[in-house]
Image (cartoon, rainbow, N blue to C red):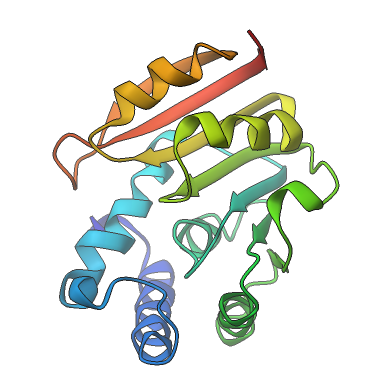
Length: 198
């Protein structure tokens, strides 16, 4: 999938990959067993969101950013858009990595918030993303707190996503579009909007 992006974007993604590999030796940003498939397993996986999202302005909040997946990948892809990426990460070492990447790649559209998701003021975000953070029922209060009324969430979920949706619907109302993952069989990107208590 990386062939579908501009030369400048490709170069930045390559630089990001190098930084991720280098820092991963000291901080567990991605599972070491996945390093050999870093491009397909992580970067191309996250780039899928760029096929469906069309951010025009406002805040894009990436919750539990970890190693910047998908936050940094999307900030690189959408660097020419007037969108501010807020990467929320409670782990100090991972937050330091994210800040270092933003500086190294000259990503002026990125801010890092080193705090717990539930502790920060509501972000009123036009877009929210999360990958491998928590089951959907636990994510819903975060969406309710931080997403703008007309906002959209892009949640990357594994094979058990339907069971998570069914459980979340017991407590929450929301619009849902599921998009089959092109990189992981059975996985999906969940596009969620109009969140409210059930």
